[in-house]
Length: 249
Image (cartoon, rainbow, N blue to C red; front, side):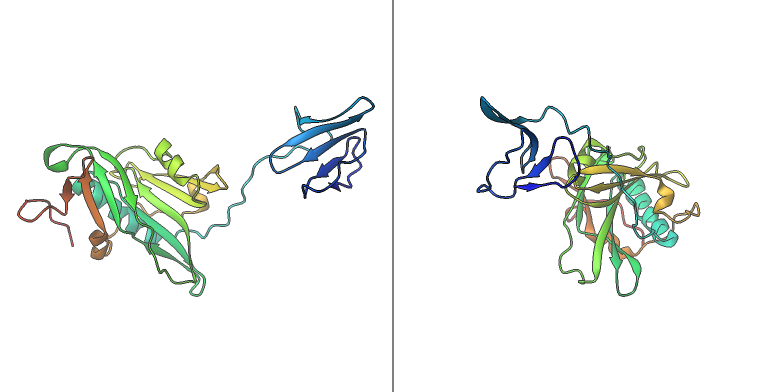
């Protein structure tokens, strides 16, 4: 056992080994890997029970996050909005991009992973966006660190849905949602996740000024995206011989 050296009325011990002998204090707290215990060495018994509350002698604390994420450059964000706008206007589909920090060139890199966007049924798949799944890219340069994802909600509001929260629970970093993509500027929702805890952040902390204009994006981004209905029927690119929309170059 290791006793904390703070001058507490009720001492706190840390259990570091199963072989450690119990302390001899009349009353003490025992911090273990699974619980905080309140323990007693009484003349008539020796006990350890789950503590009903944390020691009141300790100072309170709260979850916090001091964000030091790299700012997303304006030109990159406007290019991403152009990509999201295209997918929404042409296919009523969501899309996602990843951001990585290049530690050698000291700049933010945009990554468009292979992804499949699901939509509800409708004429030629022009229905309702359901969600997007992507495959995390392999063999990225070692000096690239993915720190954020940005995905669209098409014409819907920007917020962290229950699906988003579930998917991001074990994905530490920055999570940005772009909604109302038909507007200029669109709506932006920003949260950070660390060890399962979520922190809402003002968009201004990570986004440079948005100039109110979406810009062109590389045509090869569209080669990494497909759209299908919930039953897996391809919508875009369409099977051979089926008419569909043509991607803008």
